Length: 221
Image (tube, rainbow, N blue to C red; front, side, top):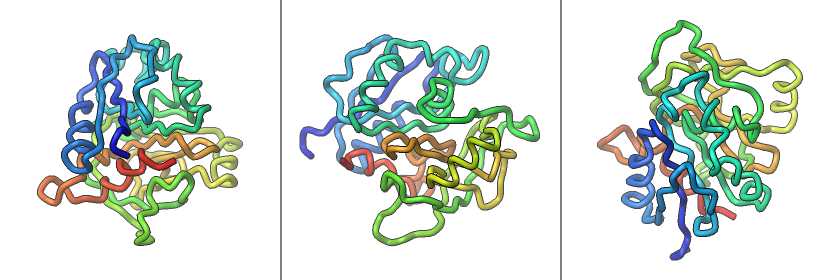
């Protein structure tokens, strides 16, 4: 995978793009390339990360303006080709706003910004994002969000459950998310959205290493 390159999308207001690049290059030796949101050329990258932050200042709704960017408009063919897309926090919000993942992320139940480490149950191996061969049942990752409460209607929730599209659930729900959902995939399994930040859990000295495998999974076919 010497030539494998992960594109890290940069929106006005992104603030975790460099964190993601540092984790991929510094901890996993995976090459990265920053992609400005106005670019629609994805030919030089093999996988994409939509990082956390506050794209377009979170005006209107989180991710509501970013969904109209040229890069997101070009993402449809990229996803259909089977290449992998990871949306972290604001990236997850963008993926739901743009229809790549179902449901929506809304204001936390207690209307507060939450910054904490959370324990998560690994629910599904769809897409291979969390199955590191150790058969780990729980992981711990940091969260930092004010609008991280996942919501969907009952029909969508049934579809998520029936098709094993729920990847992660909170052990102790911090934000009121439906069914304790912290992360989901599309039906093909090549698109993952999650509110926790795996890029902030890649070294023991900065919060553990439970995020490493999810980032490494970007290179899976």
